[in-house]
Length: 515
Image 1 (spheres, rainbow, N blue to C red):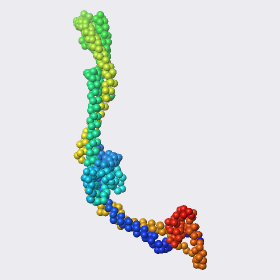
Image 2 (cartoon, helix red, strand yellow):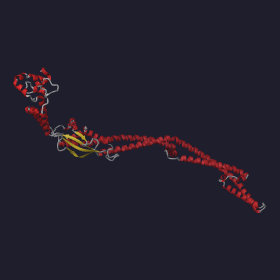
Image 3 (cartoon, rainbow, N blue to C red):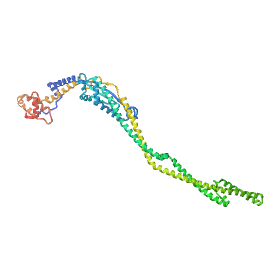
Image 4 (cartoon, rainbow, N blue to C red):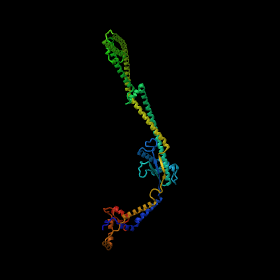
């Protein structure tokens, strides 16, 4: 029968092996269980003190409300900063000095704590978010400190919290002080630029003088016409009126001069020309009435009739008065024409002066607009810089007044230390020993193989022949089967009943027949 034909033992074979070779699995189980029990007894308990903390933003200069973070990234940044500070050397060193040395330690106080102690404490300090949350997504997080002593773990947690709050306040103070110093210089430079720009603007406005209001109106779009524009418009309108009056007076003067020679021409004068001469109009109307009355009387009476002669006399008197009035009107028209001419010349001078001033203002408008915009921009920069400086000073003042980190209740360690219990350690050691012994047993001892009746009879009839062929199974066991390490070829070599020891059998497996 091929010894490698069956390599997987059945459960009954395993039970038979365990019952036959008890020392293979009892000794490892007892040894490992004993070592695990010794380790469980010697191993110190580890306690973890947990302190719930909550962080907020600064109360001042916050758009969403006092103490609220504008964005989740800001809160995450603050918590990451707290994490770095909590594991910093200064915080841990100060906490160890505050708590003191562990019980039973007699080191020199001047050399306490050494870098190794600080590094060991750093490995036992961690910041964690609440269960089910992500770090940086909630304002609450936990500071956890581990130590072999329950009271010392709580004391270290409190000391680290104290030093963490103080260190975070110092960091805020340093940051605010740095920002304040920088912003003070920024405000100083911004004010210097603003003063320079204001001086240039003042020179331009001084150069403009009384026309400053006109220049400002020109610089502001959509503000309507300025007073200078309105003045120019009024002057032009008055010049047009003077020109029209001058033309009418010249025509009237010409007609009045002709009327002195022929009074009948006055009757044909248009009424619009006589609007400026009401006396002539009245005399003209009276003369026409007298002429009509005379003509009417002559139609019914003779010229010698007293009424006709009276009407003709009245007509002559009115004509004499009209002739005298014509002379007076001519002198008045000439005087009025002279006045209108002088007025027109003065208005033309005013119009030229206003046009010149408007041209000068138009040339200065672009420069004035740029200078005004520059001054306004620098004024905004100064205002913004002063606002930032006020915020930085407020942060600097609040850095020492209050802490952004607040504690929730007090640190707790729980009723049991963390890690497996002593009984669990012992059970794990025993289980490991049993598994190791069982594995060694299955690898070194061949399980009993079931045999046929004929083979058993042949084995009883020829015992000597089987003994004479004892080296053959050992030699067959020297070569490994193609299926890997099976129980068939190895077990006969390592069987306690064989002629080779375990060491010799393993050497034969590795080095072959050379051993």
